[in-house]
Length: 535
Image 1 (cartoon, rainbow, N blue to C red):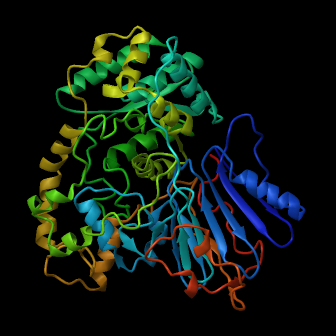
Image 2: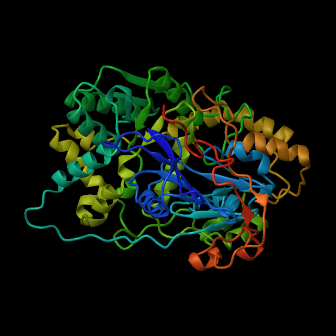
Image 3: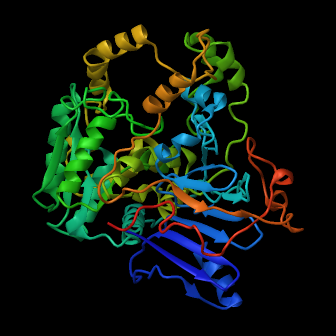
């Protein structure tokens, strides 16, 4: 599902790592020598790729450029020292570059006020946001793109076929990728979003698609099982249906990587243990791709004007949160500083996709999220409110398949609330008691008011308990990805100041402190750079 290629005109070099698309032959990875004009054309076309991609550009005596595409499926974290730039979708690969906590981002997480930006919880590690460019020439400078433009609801034509347009958009989104039905699994939770996608795909590939799910607890469990069974009976799926009981394999289980002190990013899947076990099962059964219903909420979300509601992480709630002290409150004054401009894909969707990707990538599985496709997003923006409210679009699509009201209008809430409650009251209680007895290191720059200082050994414990898992499968055992290891050259060339090219990001070195370095066009660049090799 991933390919990489390289072109050079003898002076400039471009390396592309990208998600494969259907109806295109796989690219050969060997570098190709082209003319300067052909190089310019290749660079322009690379930036128009309709799926996920990362571009690395090198020119002697100029900073290295790393650019991310708009349709992000995976995160890309960056770190650097005076000679090298490193990048990875797994924050653990960069843990040696952590110099402390980032108070602003940690404070956001403490009140659950997520913001899509170059910030991560750790100083020394940065996120390369969608369409952003990293400039590295000994120092790191990040440049945000211009804001993406979006539209609003439109009036429907009298003969508008909304469900037909929805089916066409789903087909386009899923048809963009070269999905092999025998190696593709649909994560069919029983909800509206995954159910809508999986049933449509099963119509196109009858009897060929396998499914999977985590079973919840509480009163919604029996309903979830019934709804999934009805969906799988309405259209022909393959026989294989991998289920994992999240009430048995709960978060905070003693076997959970987080509990064992593995390097797990704070952004990674909250239900880490059950999702990890499920992913290993899928990989053992030969899955190369997992299709999810993530971002279905955002596709049909109502605006504040349509449905006034309280936003997450409202700063007015700070006095009600006993764990927020003076330092966190001070950091939250700047909670909305330095955030990325409006993205092509909803920023909350991008954060959600970053949460899901690492667990799958470690097992050599590529995630596909059709609801995050720009075509699907645009359809959602254009739909009138009555098609979006309470997910009427998805409900009506499932009803059109003849599914009962048990599926289209479920009586019980289905969520992981009971799973989390069970985890906290069983495995969580002794874990918290141990943490309170032994202490839980949060680094020397904690934004909380514990009144306690931590030494270097505590900072090491922080890295072990708070950053991504270093465990790897045989398909993705790499060291940190080094983009460039430049040798010191002469002074910067005039006219190369990135500040003139768009908005900038606080917290990194400004262009005035950047030093341009000489780079061999093809030297010290990994293959691949930030994404895993095709399964």
